[in-house]
Image (cartoon, rainbow, N blue to C red):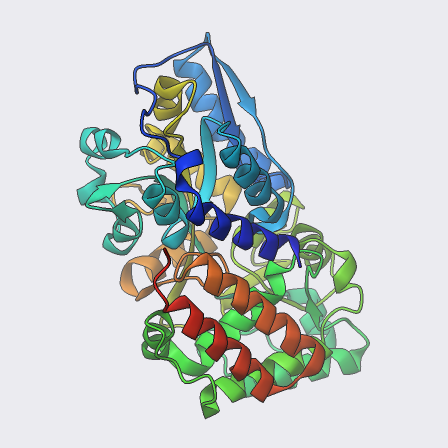
Length: 428
């Protein structure tokens, strides 16, 4: 089982044993010591810079507190989530940790692991400032349980302009059709360059690639069917997505299995490949690598997904049993203030999920991403544990991995139909 699936399984296991995590006597929110531990999975160059923005803000307001960065390396939290699950089972949570919006944060809330942040939302009027879709994804029993740092657009295709030019391929733009994309991948290969970068050492990258391909094929209405467990996994649109996915894997970097997501992104920046399908964490990493937007690289919506925003929303939460509850809430407070959001977004590549941040000073790509966020349907990701349960996420990862090896569409449908039937059974 992969680290990502171990993470999903660990979270699912916690759901069966809520007593050891939430407890019946939460630490008072007034509890305060001179220490704060924050666990995340932000360890790449761009991620670390963005996280430093949050720590700097907290330390400026709390000079006597020892704020500890407990980041655990591993793309999309594959290792951090497992480590966190073990600490929760031992009743020893960090004060603050990173998770995703939707089912991830709601799962922690339902088990009593994290405390409501309604006081922060009231004080900072986040209920009226925040995107309604993101706000809803943070709610459990009518109260919010996490503060988002921003939204990443997952359905993005990045490309190295010089590699494309050398291959005689025009840079893609809005309306880029999937058949054209596949043909262009072939042209790049014929030129002798690597068509598609992929950070296969982080398993989420392959699942994210399929997720984008699936969205391209089924559209936003099909995504609603997926989230409601009403998608026909044997349909022609799913089979089209699978076939396209297989073709892209055949054209992917032969070194993909040795690269993490950020290493693959830096390879794109250096001209080691032509394209990369990756959420726009890649934008921050491309800039961190010294690549110049518009000159060396650019990005556009993944083929066939121009009119939707597949969101990956990082969220920080405060433990119910935080030893330093006052400090924990203090760290979360102000994350969505414009003075924090601008430098954070600039480093991270994400965009604010509150309306009153002036994004005009952000780079061109992020301004375009922000426009798409506020004008397009915002969809939650399956690959990042937002749209569906940890059990379904684990099954989705397994099905994609199996298809990548065997290329059997019927087996893929069987796997997903099985996990859907199990996911519909109420958990005791």
